[in-house]
Length: 459
Image (cartoon, rainbow, N blue to C red; front, side):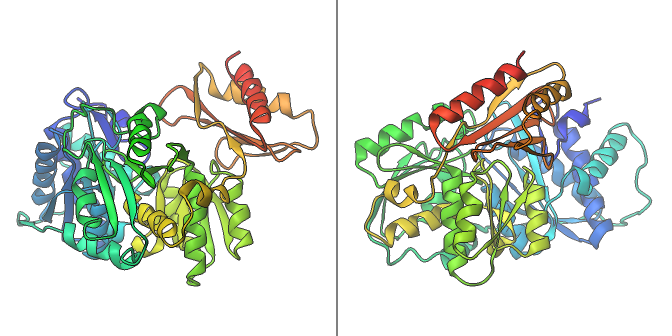
């Protein structure tokens, strides 16, 4: 019996195939998902899509069998990125399921599920119930009272061109100056979507690793790890490009490299896109999680916006966007959320905003983003600990002797220091880890704080 508590995590399904899950598990999850969305809203169909991993097609088909067994139809969108699945769920107003393990290595696969309109499903908003029903189905229990009476039907729909047209309607790149853009798809789904979305525009696209290959022969499709940006950084300089784009495996996140080959902070991208959205005059609220740079809320306020700080995680961001009717939200992990995209995250749309901002003026990307980069950040640093709560308490005690220090516990422990520096210490939901993020006015101060906190954590 698979351990679904370790497979079905806070926001999605993610695990090694076949060690942690297989087609029988996918079939059970499909039935539980179909019953959940039918019971909640009367949904009579769901839309699915999958990435290029070898196991994605058989898992998605098994999931579909489970859905069909509950009398719910399946619309197969086929090969696509996660944000393309969100587009399908939004434009068709159907619950959706994307088969991908995102940036994880080749032996992994997973499912990202959403309600109709691309609304999130997380552990506290349906995923726990889906997990419990799936476990009971795998144990052979009779779980559901409802007899669907009929088996659902399957249809196919190619939504890639509709997705492309929709994005191009949100950001007009047709009149920007010519730009040379290196794109590293990491053998992931960016190699499928980028050629369609960016074709016919004043962009000289230099493709890297566009061949769809779930074994990831060149590097892991995880641009959050600096090691996976090295090839792109080198290519941008070699080609004299204006910008480099790196997509993760399912292409819902994008990371940027400037013309010098230097990475652009996701916080700087968040601030840049936020300013563009505020200028449209269609809303003032911008969401940012508590790990993004302090520059983000500062810049939002300077441009007449209302920044709202949230916990880390897409379900929290999306819920807060719905509550506040925010126009845009950004995370330190390069997830970017747009009200015009059903409040879902899309790396492609964020990239298009940056290309528009760059191409509408004569300066370089490094000059453009300098205005949005005010502080020095450590990046996320993980420490393996035996007792996370004990280590967090030790850190709080060490800084609690100074009455000028402020604490909050919105997500882990955030410590605000008198000179404007801050750090956040959060426990992982799934591993015995503490995650540290530090930001300070300069590099020396950041290093000082980082080393002191790590000494306390790793004592």
